[in-house]
Length: 619
Ligand code: GCB
Image (tube, rainbow, N blue to C red; front, side, top):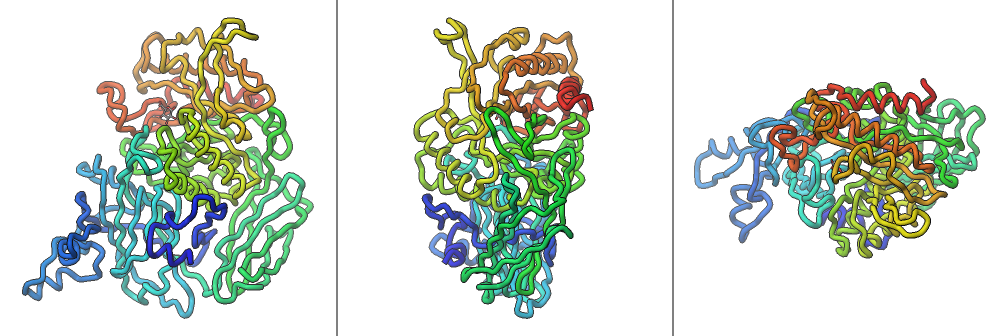
Protein backbone atom coordinates (compact mmCIF):
# COMPACT_ATOMS: atom_id res chain seq x y z
CA UNK A 1 0.00 0.00 0.00
CA UNK A 2 2.80 2.39 0.90
CA UNK A 3 4.32 1.88 -2.55
CA UNK A 4 1.08 2.73 -4.28
CA UNK A 5 0.69 5.88 -2.23
CA UNK A 6 4.27 6.80 -2.90
CA UNK A 7 3.65 6.71 -6.60
CA UNK A 8 0.40 8.58 -6.33
CA UNK A 9 1.43 11.43 -4.06
CA UNK A 10 4.11 12.99 -1.94
CA UNK A 11 6.26 10.37 -0.30
CA UNK A 12 5.75 12.01 3.06
CA UNK A 13 2.07 12.73 2.71
CA UNK A 14 0.95 9.16 3.23
CA UNK A 15 2.10 8.75 6.82
CA UNK A 16 -0.36 9.46 9.62
CA UNK A 17 1.09 11.82 12.23
CA UNK A 18 0.39 9.46 15.08
CA UNK A 19 2.12 6.49 13.45
CA UNK A 20 5.34 5.41 15.10
CA UNK A 21 6.49 3.50 12.06
CA UNK A 22 7.57 6.16 9.61
CA UNK A 23 9.68 3.74 7.64
CA UNK A 24 10.08 4.85 4.03
CA UNK A 25 8.89 2.28 1.45
CA UNK A 26 12.51 1.50 0.49
CA UNK A 27 15.75 2.23 2.31
CA UNK A 28 18.44 0.31 0.44
CA UNK A 29 20.76 0.46 3.42
CA UNK A 30 24.37 0.19 2.33
CA UNK A 31 23.49 1.39 -1.19
CA UNK A 32 27.00 2.77 -1.69
CA UNK A 33 28.37 -0.77 -1.54
CA UNK A 34 25.76 -2.28 -3.87
CA UNK A 35 25.75 -3.08 -7.56
CA UNK A 36 24.92 0.36 -8.89
CA UNK A 37 25.51 3.04 -11.47
CA UNK A 38 26.49 6.51 -10.30
CA UNK A 39 24.52 9.09 -12.30
CA UNK A 40 26.78 11.99 -11.28
CA UNK A 41 28.16 14.10 -14.08
CA UNK A 42 26.90 16.65 -16.57
CA UNK A 43 23.12 16.94 -16.75
CA UNK A 44 21.15 19.47 -18.78
CA UNK A 45 18.71 21.90 -17.22
CA UNK A 46 15.86 24.27 -17.96
CA UNK A 47 14.66 27.08 -15.66
CA UNK A 48 10.94 27.15 -15.00
CA UNK A 49 10.17 30.10 -12.74
CA UNK A 50 6.45 30.01 -13.62
CA UNK A 51 6.21 26.24 -13.14
CA UNK A 52 4.87 25.68 -16.65
CA UNK A 53 6.22 22.13 -16.68
CA UNK A 54 3.96 21.22 -13.77
CA UNK A 55 0.92 23.43 -14.23
CA UNK A 56 -1.71 22.25 -16.57
CA UNK A 57 -4.07 25.05 -17.63
CA UNK A 58 -7.04 23.25 -19.15
CA UNK A 59 -4.66 20.67 -20.46
CA UNK A 60 -3.19 22.77 -23.22
CA UNK A 61 -0.23 24.89 -22.10
CA UNK A 62 1.69 22.24 -20.28
CA UNK A 63 0.65 19.20 -22.22
CA UNK A 64 1.55 20.30 -25.65
CA UNK A 65 4.55 22.54 -25.26
CA UNK A 66 6.18 22.82 -21.88
CA UNK A 67 6.29 19.50 -20.08
CA UNK A 68 10.04 19.07 -19.71
CA UNK A 69 9.67 15.46 -18.63
CA UNK A 70 8.17 14.19 -21.90
CA UNK A 71 10.07 11.33 -23.46
CA UNK A 72 10.44 12.88 -26.84
CA UNK A 73 13.26 13.83 -29.23
CA UNK A 74 12.31 17.47 -29.86
CA UNK A 75 14.97 18.07 -32.54
CA UNK A 76 13.64 15.10 -34.54
CA UNK A 77 10.05 16.32 -34.13
CA UNK A 78 10.99 19.80 -35.32
CA UNK A 79 12.80 18.39 -38.35
CA UNK A 80 9.53 16.83 -39.46
CA UNK A 81 7.90 20.29 -39.80
CA UNK A 82 4.11 20.54 -39.46
CA UNK A 83 1.95 22.00 -36.68
CA UNK A 84 3.49 20.44 -33.58
CA UNK A 85 5.79 22.71 -31.61
CA UNK A 86 7.57 22.74 -28.30
CA UNK A 87 8.90 25.46 -26.01
CA UNK A 88 11.55 23.33 -24.39
CA UNK A 89 14.24 20.88 -25.35
CA UNK A 90 16.04 19.16 -22.51
CA UNK A 91 18.47 17.46 -24.91
CA UNK A 92 19.89 20.77 -26.07
CA UNK A 93 19.74 22.60 -22.72
CA UNK A 94 22.68 24.18 -20.90
CA UNK A 95 24.83 21.83 -18.85
CA UNK A 96 25.32 21.69 -15.10
CA UNK A 97 27.27 19.44 -12.77
CA UNK A 98 25.26 17.02 -10.62
CA UNK A 99 25.60 16.78 -7.69
CA UNK A 100 25.89 20.43 -6.74
CA UNK A 101 23.78 23.48 -5.98
CA UNK A 102 22.77 25.55 -8.98
CA UNK A 103 23.47 28.80 -7.11
CA UNK A 104 27.20 28.25 -7.53
CA UNK A 105 27.00 27.11 -11.15
CA UNK A 106 26.00 30.30 -12.99
CA UNK A 107 25.85 33.97 -11.95
CA UNK A 108 22.25 34.11 -13.23
CA UNK A 109 21.34 31.29 -10.82
CA UNK A 110 23.01 32.82 -7.73
CA UNK A 111 19.68 33.88 -6.19
CA UNK A 112 17.33 31.81 -8.32
CA UNK A 113 14.68 30.38 -6.04
CA UNK A 114 12.07 28.22 -7.73
CA UNK A 115 11.69 25.28 -10.11
CA UNK A 116 14.41 23.97 -12.43
CA UNK A 117 14.21 20.81 -14.55
CA UNK A 118 17.20 18.51 -14.85
CA UNK A 119 17.75 15.73 -17.34
CA UNK A 120 20.21 12.91 -17.57
CA UNK A 121 20.21 10.17 -20.22
CA UNK A 122 21.80 6.89 -19.26
CA UNK A 123 22.06 3.28 -20.37
CA UNK A 124 21.00 0.56 -18.02
CA UNK A 125 21.82 -3.10 -18.06
CA UNK A 126 19.10 -5.77 -18.45
CA UNK A 127 17.46 -6.69 -15.15
CA UNK A 128 17.06 -10.43 -15.81
CA UNK A 129 14.35 -10.81 -13.21
CA UNK A 130 16.02 -8.42 -10.73
CA UNK A 131 14.85 -5.00 -9.61
CA UNK A 132 16.11 -1.47 -10.03
CA UNK A 133 15.84 1.63 -7.85
CA UNK A 134 16.80 5.25 -8.13
CA UNK A 135 18.31 6.48 -4.92
CA UNK A 136 18.68 10.22 -4.42
CA UNK A 137 20.88 11.20 -1.47
CA UNK A 138 19.35 14.70 -1.37
CA UNK A 139 17.38 17.12 -3.53
CA UNK A 140 16.72 20.61 -2.14
CA UNK A 141 13.81 21.14 -1.54
CA UNK A 142 11.08 19.27 -3.48
CA UNK A 143 11.70 16.70 -6.19
CA UNK A 144 9.41 15.51 -9.03
CA UNK A 145 10.95 12.44 -10.62
CA UNK A 146 10.09 11.10 -14.09
CA UNK A 147 11.66 8.22 -15.95
CA UNK A 148 11.03 7.87 -19.67
CA UNK A 149 8.10 10.29 -19.42
CA UNK A 150 6.39 8.55 -16.46
CA UNK A 151 6.15 10.02 -13.01
CA UNK A 152 7.79 7.63 -10.58
CA UNK A 153 7.64 9.65 -7.36
CA UNK A 154 7.99 12.88 -5.43
CA UNK A 155 9.81 13.87 -2.31
CA UNK A 156 9.85 16.82 0.04
CA UNK A 157 12.79 17.65 2.30
CA UNK A 158 16.19 18.87 1.20
CA UNK A 159 18.63 16.75 3.18
CA UNK A 160 17.40 13.18 3.41
CA UNK A 161 17.62 10.33 0.91
CA UNK A 162 14.72 8.79 -0.97
CA UNK A 163 14.51 5.65 -3.03
CA UNK A 164 12.04 4.97 -5.84
CA UNK A 165 11.56 1.65 -7.57
CA UNK A 166 11.96 1.85 -11.36
CA UNK A 167 11.87 -1.84 -12.24
CA UNK A 168 8.87 -1.39 -14.55
CA UNK A 169 9.71 2.03 -15.96
CA UNK A 170 13.32 1.23 -16.82
CA UNK A 171 14.28 0.24 -20.39
CA UNK A 172 17.17 -2.08 -21.08
CA UNK A 173 19.37 0.36 -22.96
CA UNK A 174 18.60 4.08 -23.29
CA UNK A 175 16.70 5.91 -20.56
CA UNK A 176 15.70 9.50 -19.97
CA UNK A 177 15.60 10.66 -16.33
CA UNK A 178 14.01 14.05 -15.66
CA UNK A 179 13.85 15.67 -12.24
CA UNK A 180 11.97 18.86 -11.40
CA UNK A 181 13.62 20.53 -8.40
CA UNK A 182 11.74 23.24 -6.55
CA UNK A 183 13.88 25.15 -4.03
CA UNK A 184 11.03 27.34 -2.78
CA UNK A 185 10.49 27.32 0.97
CA UNK A 186 7.34 28.65 2.59
CA UNK A 187 5.76 28.90 6.03
CA UNK A 188 4.94 25.17 5.97
CA UNK A 189 8.26 23.85 4.73
CA UNK A 190 11.04 22.53 6.98
CA UNK A 191 12.89 24.81 7.36
CA UNK A 192 10.64 27.74 6.54
CA UNK A 193 11.93 30.56 4.35
CA UNK A 194 13.57 32.25 7.36
CA UNK A 195 17.03 30.84 8.02
CA UNK A 196 20.62 31.99 8.29
CA UNK A 197 22.15 29.95 5.48
CA UNK A 198 22.13 29.87 1.70
CA UNK A 199 19.25 28.64 -0.44
CA UNK A 200 21.33 26.05 -2.30
CA UNK A 201 18.76 24.59 -4.69
CA UNK A 202 19.42 21.53 -6.77
CA UNK A 203 20.33 17.88 -6.81
CA UNK A 204 22.95 18.48 -4.17
CA UNK A 205 24.03 14.91 -3.47
CA UNK A 206 24.70 11.84 -5.64
CA UNK A 207 22.02 9.94 -7.55
CA UNK A 208 22.47 6.24 -8.06
CA UNK A 209 20.71 3.54 -10.07
CA UNK A 210 20.85 0.49 -7.83
CA UNK A 211 20.29 -3.10 -8.99
CA UNK A 212 19.04 -5.77 -6.61
CA UNK A 213 17.83 -9.35 -6.87
CA UNK A 214 14.03 -9.85 -6.83
CA UNK A 215 14.21 -10.55 -3.10
CA UNK A 216 16.71 -8.29 -1.41
CA UNK A 217 17.86 -6.93 1.93
CA UNK A 218 16.32 -3.47 2.23
CA UNK A 219 17.46 -2.67 5.73
CA UNK A 220 20.07 -4.09 8.06
CA UNK A 221 21.12 -2.64 11.37
CA UNK A 222 23.15 -3.61 14.44
CA UNK A 223 23.82 -1.76 17.68
CA UNK A 224 25.85 -2.42 20.80
CA UNK A 225 23.72 -2.00 23.90
CA UNK A 226 24.95 -0.89 27.31
CA UNK A 227 24.42 -4.43 28.68
CA UNK A 228 26.98 -5.82 26.24
CA UNK A 229 24.55 -7.39 23.81
CA UNK A 230 24.38 -6.60 20.12
CA UNK A 231 20.87 -6.23 18.82
CA UNK A 232 19.56 -5.44 15.40
CA UNK A 233 17.23 -6.31 12.61
CA UNK A 234 17.23 -7.16 8.93
CA UNK A 235 14.30 -6.54 6.63
CA UNK A 236 13.86 -8.34 3.34
CA UNK A 237 11.58 -7.33 0.52
CA UNK A 238 10.37 -9.42 -2.37
CA UNK A 239 8.51 -12.63 -3.20
CA UNK A 240 10.85 -14.86 -1.15
CA UNK A 241 11.23 -12.54 1.85
CA UNK A 242 9.24 -14.64 4.32
CA UNK A 243 11.11 -17.07 6.53
CA UNK A 244 14.50 -16.65 4.93
CA UNK A 245 17.54 -17.48 6.98
CA UNK A 246 19.59 -14.35 7.53
CA UNK A 247 23.27 -14.42 8.40
CA UNK A 248 25.33 -11.63 9.86
CA UNK A 249 29.11 -11.63 10.15
CA UNK A 250 31.02 -9.06 12.22
CA UNK A 251 34.47 -9.05 10.66
CA UNK A 252 36.04 -12.40 11.50
CA UNK A 253 34.91 -12.15 15.12
CA UNK A 254 31.43 -13.60 15.01
CA UNK A 255 28.63 -14.85 12.84
CA UNK A 256 25.00 -15.35 13.77
CA UNK A 257 21.84 -16.43 12.02
CA UNK A 258 18.18 -15.65 12.49
CA UNK A 259 15.06 -16.62 10.60
CA UNK A 260 12.83 -13.94 9.13
CA UNK A 261 9.15 -13.82 10.06
CA UNK A 262 6.28 -13.85 7.57
CA UNK A 263 6.97 -10.19 6.77
CA UNK A 264 10.63 -10.76 6.03
CA UNK A 265 11.90 -9.32 9.31
CA UNK A 266 14.68 -11.05 11.22
CA UNK A 267 15.78 -9.94 14.67
CA UNK A 268 19.23 -10.39 16.20
CA UNK A 269 20.14 -10.38 19.88
CA UNK A 270 23.61 -11.77 20.42
CA UNK A 271 26.33 -11.50 23.02
CA UNK A 272 29.08 -9.09 21.94
CA UNK A 273 31.96 -11.30 20.80
CA UNK A 274 34.98 -11.49 23.08
CA UNK A 275 37.65 -9.27 21.65
CA UNK A 276 35.20 -6.75 20.19
CA UNK A 277 37.09 -3.46 20.20
CA UNK A 278 34.94 -0.49 21.14
CA UNK A 279 34.77 2.45 18.73
CA UNK A 280 35.83 5.82 20.15
CA UNK A 281 37.30 9.07 18.80
CA UNK A 282 40.72 7.96 20.05
CA UNK A 283 40.41 4.56 18.46
CA UNK A 284 37.78 4.58 15.70
CA UNK A 285 37.77 0.85 15.06
CA UNK A 286 35.38 -0.22 12.28
CA UNK A 287 34.40 -3.75 11.34
CA UNK A 288 33.39 -5.09 8.00
CA UNK A 289 29.84 -6.29 8.67
CA UNK A 290 28.05 -8.52 6.18
CA UNK A 291 24.36 -9.37 6.12
CA UNK A 292 23.31 -12.18 3.77
CA UNK A 293 19.95 -13.70 2.89
CA UNK A 294 18.36 -15.26 -0.19
CA UNK A 295 20.86 -14.38 -2.91
CA UNK A 296 21.62 -10.92 -1.56
CA UNK A 297 24.47 -9.54 0.54
CA UNK A 298 24.73 -6.09 2.08
CA UNK A 299 27.96 -4.92 3.62
CA UNK A 300 28.70 -2.00 5.84
CA UNK A 301 31.66 -0.65 7.83
CA UNK A 302 30.47 -0.36 11.40
CA UNK A 303 31.78 0.61 14.81
CA UNK A 304 30.42 -0.55 18.15
CA UNK A 305 30.21 1.70 21.21
CA UNK A 306 27.76 2.66 23.91
CA UNK A 307 26.54 6.13 24.77
CA UNK A 308 24.57 7.04 27.88
CA UNK A 309 23.90 9.74 30.42
CA UNK A 310 24.37 9.29 34.16
CA UNK A 311 23.60 12.22 36.43
CA UNK A 312 25.42 15.14 34.86
CA UNK A 313 27.88 12.91 32.98
CA UNK A 314 27.87 11.79 29.37
CA UNK A 315 29.34 8.29 29.21
CA UNK A 316 31.02 6.89 26.10
CA UNK A 317 31.71 3.19 26.52
CA UNK A 318 30.92 3.67 30.22
CA UNK A 319 33.45 6.49 30.76
CA UNK A 320 32.79 10.22 31.21
CA UNK A 321 33.63 12.28 28.17
CA UNK A 322 33.89 16.01 27.41
CA UNK A 323 32.76 16.95 23.89
CA UNK A 324 35.41 19.14 22.31
CA UNK A 325 33.49 20.24 19.27
CA UNK A 326 32.57 22.83 16.72
CA UNK A 327 29.51 23.47 14.58
CA UNK A 328 29.66 22.95 10.83
CA UNK A 329 27.48 23.86 7.87
CA UNK A 330 27.68 21.69 4.79
CA UNK A 331 30.00 23.91 2.78
CA UNK A 332 33.34 23.00 1.27
CA UNK A 333 36.33 25.38 1.34
CA UNK A 334 36.48 28.01 -1.38
CA UNK A 335 35.01 31.31 -2.46
CA UNK A 336 32.05 29.71 -4.24
CA UNK A 337 30.79 26.65 -2.36
CA UNK A 338 28.27 24.47 -4.20
CA UNK A 339 27.36 22.25 -1.24
CA UNK A 340 29.05 19.42 -3.07
CA UNK A 341 30.55 17.31 -0.34
CA UNK A 342 33.09 15.15 -2.05
CA UNK A 343 35.10 12.84 0.12
CA UNK A 344 38.17 15.07 -0.11
CA UNK A 345 36.19 18.25 0.73
CA UNK A 346 34.64 16.61 3.75
CA UNK A 347 37.91 15.07 4.86
CA UNK A 348 39.61 18.49 4.75
CA UNK A 349 36.94 20.01 7.01
CA UNK A 350 36.90 17.15 9.50
CA UNK A 351 40.69 17.12 9.54
CA UNK A 352 40.68 20.75 10.72
CA UNK A 353 38.34 19.78 13.56
CA UNK A 354 40.19 16.69 14.64
CA UNK A 355 43.79 17.72 14.14
CA UNK A 356 43.65 21.54 13.87
CA UNK A 357 41.35 22.14 16.85
CA UNK A 358 42.11 18.91 18.79
CA UNK A 359 38.39 18.13 18.66
CA UNK A 360 36.51 14.90 19.22
CA UNK A 361 33.03 16.10 18.28
CA UNK A 362 31.13 17.95 15.55
CA UNK A 363 27.68 19.44 15.48
CA UNK A 364 26.41 18.81 11.96
CA UNK A 365 24.07 21.80 11.85
CA UNK A 366 21.26 22.49 11.00
CA UNK A 367 20.18 19.52 8.89
CA UNK A 368 21.43 16.02 8.05
CA UNK A 369 24.79 16.38 6.29
CA UNK A 370 26.05 14.22 3.42
CA UNK A 371 26.38 10.50 3.91
CA UNK A 372 30.05 10.82 3.04
CA UNK A 373 30.60 13.17 6.00
CA UNK A 374 28.96 10.88 8.53
CA UNK A 375 30.91 7.90 7.21
CA UNK A 376 34.13 9.89 7.49
CA UNK A 377 33.24 10.85 11.07
CA UNK A 378 33.06 7.10 11.76
CA UNK A 379 36.38 6.52 10.07
CA UNK A 380 38.27 9.53 11.47
CA UNK A 381 36.82 9.36 14.99
CA UNK A 382 34.51 12.30 15.61
CA UNK A 383 31.32 12.13 17.65
CA UNK A 384 28.33 13.62 15.82
CA UNK A 385 25.28 15.65 16.79
CA UNK A 386 22.69 15.19 14.04
CA UNK A 387 19.73 17.50 13.54
CA UNK A 388 16.86 18.29 11.23
CA UNK A 389 16.00 21.89 10.33
CA UNK A 390 13.18 22.48 12.78
CA UNK A 391 14.62 25.92 13.23
CA UNK A 392 13.40 29.29 14.52
CA UNK A 393 9.91 29.65 13.03
CA UNK A 394 7.74 26.63 12.37
CA UNK A 395 4.00 26.34 11.85
CA UNK A 396 3.65 24.52 15.19
CA UNK A 397 -0.08 23.89 15.10
CA UNK A 398 -0.21 22.47 11.61
CA UNK A 399 -0.45 18.65 11.65
CA UNK A 400 0.97 18.40 8.12
CA UNK A 401 4.10 20.20 9.24
CA UNK A 402 4.50 17.87 12.20
CA UNK A 403 4.08 14.93 9.84
CA UNK A 404 6.88 16.31 7.66
CA UNK A 405 9.14 16.75 10.66
CA UNK A 406 8.50 13.21 11.89
CA UNK A 407 9.09 11.75 8.44
CA UNK A 408 12.30 13.75 7.99
CA UNK A 409 13.49 12.64 11.39
CA UNK A 410 12.74 9.01 10.52
CA UNK A 411 14.55 9.26 7.19
CA UNK A 412 17.59 10.61 9.04
CA UNK A 413 17.56 7.91 11.70
CA UNK A 414 17.10 5.08 9.20
CA UNK A 415 19.95 6.51 7.17
CA UNK A 416 22.46 6.90 9.99
CA UNK A 417 21.64 4.43 12.72
CA UNK A 418 24.57 2.22 11.76
CA UNK A 419 27.02 5.06 12.28
CA UNK A 420 28.85 4.77 15.60
CA UNK A 421 29.88 8.42 15.36
CA UNK A 422 26.28 9.61 15.66
CA UNK A 423 25.55 9.84 19.38
CA UNK A 424 22.88 12.53 19.58
CA UNK A 425 19.69 13.38 17.70
CA UNK A 426 18.57 16.97 18.07
CA UNK A 427 14.89 17.85 17.81
CA UNK A 428 15.19 21.61 17.32
CA UNK A 429 17.20 24.79 17.21
CA UNK A 430 16.34 28.06 18.96
CA UNK A 431 12.59 27.81 18.88
CA UNK A 432 10.85 30.31 21.15
CA UNK A 433 8.93 28.63 23.97
CA UNK A 434 5.16 28.28 23.61
CA UNK A 435 2.74 25.46 24.36
CA UNK A 436 2.17 24.40 20.70
CA UNK A 437 5.92 24.49 20.03
CA UNK A 438 6.69 22.34 23.07
CA UNK A 439 4.02 19.81 22.04
CA UNK A 440 5.54 19.66 18.56
CA UNK A 441 9.06 19.04 19.86
CA UNK A 442 7.70 16.60 22.42
CA UNK A 443 6.12 14.54 19.64
CA UNK A 444 9.44 14.61 17.82
CA UNK A 445 11.34 13.46 20.88
CA UNK A 446 8.88 10.59 21.46
CA UNK A 447 9.27 9.63 17.82
CA UNK A 448 13.06 9.58 18.07
CA UNK A 449 12.94 7.54 21.26
CA UNK A 450 10.69 4.97 19.57
CA UNK A 451 12.83 4.76 16.43
CA UNK A 452 16.20 4.67 18.19
CA UNK A 453 16.31 4.06 21.94
CA UNK A 454 20.11 3.64 21.87
CA UNK A 455 21.14 7.26 21.31
CA UNK A 456 20.74 10.53 23.20
CA UNK A 457 18.22 13.27 22.50
CA UNK A 458 18.97 16.95 22.70
CA UNK A 459 17.85 20.31 21.31
CA UNK A 460 19.58 23.67 21.06
CA UNK A 461 17.57 25.78 23.51
CA UNK A 462 17.50 29.49 24.18
CA UNK A 463 18.72 30.93 27.47
CA UNK A 464 17.04 33.67 29.44
CA UNK A 465 18.60 36.40 31.50
CA UNK A 466 16.46 37.22 34.48
CA UNK A 467 16.57 38.59 37.97
CA UNK A 468 15.91 36.19 40.81
CA UNK A 469 15.27 36.92 44.44
CA UNK A 470 16.13 33.65 46.09
CA UNK A 471 19.54 32.02 46.22
CA UNK A 472 21.35 34.54 44.02
CA UNK A 473 19.75 37.49 45.69
CA UNK A 474 18.64 40.15 43.30
CA UNK A 475 21.28 39.19 40.79
CA UNK A 476 20.71 38.46 37.16
CA UNK A 477 21.18 34.83 36.15
CA UNK A 478 21.40 33.01 32.85
CA UNK A 479 18.88 30.19 32.97
CA UNK A 480 16.92 27.75 30.82
CA UNK A 481 13.20 28.20 31.22
CA UNK A 482 11.90 25.53 28.91
CA UNK A 483 9.55 22.61 29.63
CA UNK A 484 11.09 20.75 26.68
CA UNK A 485 14.01 19.96 29.05
CA UNK A 486 11.93 17.06 30.42
CA UNK A 487 12.14 15.25 27.07
CA UNK A 488 15.89 15.60 26.60
CA UNK A 489 18.88 13.53 27.74
CA UNK A 490 21.39 16.30 27.22
CA UNK A 491 20.60 19.97 27.76
CA UNK A 492 22.07 22.29 25.15
CA UNK A 493 21.95 26.05 24.82
CA UNK A 494 23.02 28.66 22.31
CA UNK A 495 24.47 31.74 23.99
CA UNK A 496 25.72 34.91 22.36
CA UNK A 497 26.39 37.21 25.35
CA UNK A 498 29.22 39.50 24.30
CA UNK A 499 28.22 39.43 20.65
CA UNK A 500 24.51 40.16 20.30
CA UNK A 501 23.49 42.55 23.10
CA UNK A 502 25.48 44.96 25.19
CA UNK A 503 27.57 42.82 27.54
CA UNK A 504 31.22 43.76 27.60
CA UNK A 505 33.65 40.89 27.15
CA UNK A 506 35.06 41.48 30.63
CA UNK A 507 31.63 40.81 32.12
CA UNK A 508 31.27 37.30 30.65
CA UNK A 509 33.22 35.24 33.21
CA UNK A 510 31.14 36.86 35.96
CA UNK A 511 27.76 35.88 34.50
CA UNK A 512 25.89 33.57 36.85
CA UNK A 513 24.42 30.42 35.36
CA UNK A 514 21.56 28.58 36.89
CA UNK A 515 21.07 25.17 35.28
CA UNK A 516 19.99 21.78 36.72
CA UNK A 517 22.78 20.28 38.82
CA UNK A 518 22.10 16.68 37.86
CA UNK A 519 21.95 16.95 34.07
CA UNK A 520 24.69 17.34 31.46
CA UNK A 521 24.81 20.68 29.67
CA UNK A 522 26.55 21.53 26.44
CA UNK A 523 26.96 24.91 24.77
CA UNK A 524 25.59 24.03 21.35
CA UNK A 525 26.58 27.50 20.07
CA UNK A 526 28.45 30.65 20.93
CA UNK A 527 30.28 32.85 18.47
CA UNK A 528 31.21 36.24 17.07
CA UNK A 529 31.82 37.53 13.53
CA UNK A 530 35.31 38.47 12.38
CA UNK A 531 36.54 39.29 8.92
CA UNK A 532 39.82 37.44 8.36
CA UNK A 533 42.63 39.96 8.24
CA UNK A 534 40.64 42.80 9.85
CA UNK A 535 42.83 43.73 12.82
CA UNK A 536 42.61 46.22 15.66
CA UNK A 537 43.33 46.53 19.38
CA UNK A 538 40.50 44.24 20.39
CA UNK A 539 37.64 46.60 21.09
CA UNK A 540 35.97 46.70 17.71
CA UNK A 541 33.41 44.14 16.74
CA UNK A 542 34.20 42.23 13.53
CA UNK A 543 37.97 42.27 14.16
CA UNK A 544 39.97 39.08 14.69
CA UNK A 545 41.08 40.42 18.08
CA UNK A 546 37.51 40.93 19.25
CA UNK A 547 36.55 37.41 18.19
CA UNK A 548 39.62 35.96 19.94
CA UNK A 549 38.83 37.96 23.10
CA UNK A 550 35.24 36.82 22.92
CA UNK A 551 36.40 33.19 22.81
CA UNK A 552 38.78 33.68 25.77
CA UNK A 553 36.10 35.25 27.93
CA UNK A 554 33.34 32.84 26.91
CA UNK A 555 35.61 29.88 27.69
CA UNK A 556 36.35 31.45 31.09
CA UNK A 557 32.60 31.69 31.66
CA UNK A 558 32.13 28.07 30.53
CA UNK A 559 34.74 26.84 33.03
CA UNK A 560 32.48 28.05 35.84
CA UNK A 561 29.50 25.90 34.84
CA UNK A 562 29.98 22.70 36.86
CA UNK A 563 27.73 20.53 34.69
CA UNK A 564 29.26 21.57 31.37
CA UNK A 565 30.08 18.47 29.31
CA UNK A 566 30.98 19.90 25.97
CA UNK A 567 30.59 22.62 23.38
CA UNK A 568 30.26 23.26 19.65
CA UNK A 569 30.96 26.96 19.10
CA UNK A 570 29.54 28.67 16.04
CA UNK A 571 31.25 27.85 13.62
CA UNK A 572 34.21 26.18 11.85
CA UNK A 573 34.21 28.35 8.74
CA UNK A 574 32.49 31.36 7.25
CA UNK A 575 29.38 30.34 5.33
CA UNK A 576 27.07 31.92 2.82
CA UNK A 577 23.95 33.59 4.18
CA UNK A 578 21.75 35.98 2.23
CA UNK A 579 20.66 37.56 5.52
CA UNK A 580 24.18 38.92 6.15
CA UNK A 581 24.53 42.02 4.01
CA UNK A 582 26.96 44.30 5.83
CA UNK A 583 28.68 45.78 2.76
CA UNK A 584 32.20 45.91 4.21
CA UNK A 585 32.35 42.84 6.43
CA UNK A 586 29.83 40.34 5.20
CA UNK A 587 28.58 40.70 1.61
CA UNK A 588 26.44 37.61 1.89
CA UNK A 589 28.65 35.69 4.34
CA UNK A 590 28.15 34.93 8.01
CA UNK A 591 31.64 35.66 9.37
CA UNK A 592 31.52 33.69 12.62
CA UNK A 593 33.94 31.10 11.22
CA UNK A 594 37.20 30.35 12.96
CA UNK A 595 38.36 29.91 9.39
CA UNK A 596 37.65 32.21 6.48
CA UNK A 597 35.71 30.75 3.55
CA UNK A 598 39.00 29.75 1.94
CA UNK A 599 40.38 28.17 5.11
CA UNK A 600 42.57 30.96 6.53
CA UNK A 601 42.73 30.60 10.32
CA UNK A 602 41.61 33.58 12.37
CA UNK A 603 43.16 34.27 15.80
CA UNK A 604 40.27 32.67 17.68
CA UNK A 605 41.07 29.33 16.03
CA UNK A 606 44.25 29.16 18.10
CA UNK A 607 42.40 30.14 21.28
CA UNK A 608 39.99 27.23 20.93
CA UNK A 609 42.68 24.80 19.77
CA UNK A 610 44.76 25.58 22.88
CA UNK A 611 41.75 25.19 25.15
CA UNK A 612 40.89 21.80 23.64
CA UNK A 613 44.50 20.64 23.80
CA UNK A 614 44.49 21.35 27.52
CA UNK A 615 41.09 19.64 27.96
CA UNK A 616 42.37 16.58 26.13
CA UNK A 617 45.19 16.35 28.64
CA UNK A 618 47.81 18.15 26.61
CA UNK A 619 47.86 15.65 23.77
C1 GCB B 1 22.13 31.09 15.87
C2 GCB B 1 21.65 30.12 14.87
C3 GCB B 1 22.60 30.00 13.71
C4 GCB B 1 23.02 31.40 13.26
C5 GCB B 1 23.80 32.03 14.40
C6 GCB B 1 24.25 33.47 14.10
O1 GCB B 1 21.78 31.09 17.00
O2 GCB B 1 21.38 28.87 15.44
O3 GCB B 1 21.97 29.32 12.67
O4 GCB B 1 23.79 31.37 12.10
O5 GCB B 1 22.98 32.08 15.53
O6 GCB B 1 25.25 33.64 13.43
O7 GCB B 1 23.59 34.38 14.57
